[in-house]
Length: 358
Image (cartoon, helix red, strand yellow):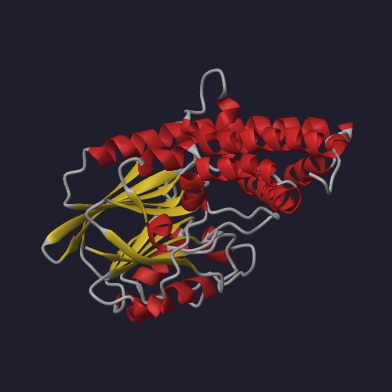
């Protein structure tokens, strides 16, 4: 305290208390369904990294100036420890040290096989060849071009590696490439939405693996809306950006409410699944601090939270950096090592790659 006067310390402490409460709200507010009186609570998790950083700065400030003041950010960080480790896990085991047996599972939103960055609609498409080069056991795709998938299913060099290919169709953009027999597949459509899910049953040895390959409701924000919203966040007193930002928030609330309904629908089916093992994966369009994430985290393992390290950013365009692609597995499966591969940049998503032991 002797380094800073009371006139400065106490107002700063008051600001710290406010940021601390907001951080707690960002961690736990999204547990509530995005309907009812506080629908905006479902978006609170988006502010988590910024609020956590502010509280960490306050912790450093108080440790060097007024140690009693450090109790506020320290207690807050402890209260938020479990959500923080979901958002930013700290498993630093090396992939090469993971020993067999395991299955390598990939979940990847290909953005139409990189349609914005290349015009190669043949099986020489760089995104498709990147996927083949991963040599995973099973690959689950979202936004997979049906034209390319049909060509892939007819090309010998691909079918020799992945003899079981389930193609997307016009109403369902999810696909699967598997080294193991696919016993059955079923598209699941969502009401009043262009998004969908692909349900599969895959034979692994003598066991059946049920998979829900999901692409939950997209936010469908336009580039100019995101730019205006970012300008509003930087300068909230500028009224020129307020109207667009208000529309952006309204659209985010509408889409997160749709995702909640879709997630509950898949979770209800998954809870009653008869297969011995189960995976729910795909593009959730939601972070680990969101309602649709919590729906599955209550009864399944998040592979990245259990065996990954760092923020694990999977969406990387429009200056928005979040982990919105997830692989959940039933609790009789063990995630050994999960990573995000940033080497392939043709899609606006990075793939999630997980080694999972039965």
